[in-house]
Image (cartoon, rainbow, N blue to C red; front, side, top):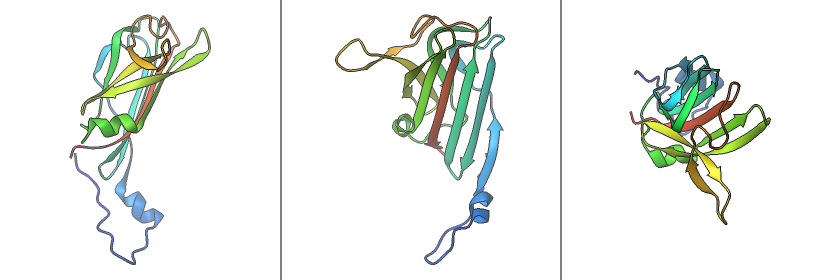
Length: 156
């Protein structure tokens, strides 16, 4: 993948919107590899944009009647990350239960190639991560939603 470069800035240079826009690329749709999730007749939106080596990711799955969640939901990244720890720090995710009209904040784990979505377990003194499954944090059904946004540095 080619990267657009706006050049090297020097002391006294003026940063303009046109200069910034020259280095930006619009949203690109991609097809992530999903683990423990079957889209079925659900609706998936997976897009990324970039500015230099910084990637902006947005992913959402609205489950249909034939969609399934069988274990820890894992979503592949469009481009490998330089650092999995950084990816964890600059991401947000959630689960929406349509029948209860309730949004649950999701915890995340990451490798340099994928993000895993966890349910937050608040049954102890400290919140812990629990692998999401077909019944955690709730029983998945038509209209329920998984969401993920992330910003990360690409490996190249």
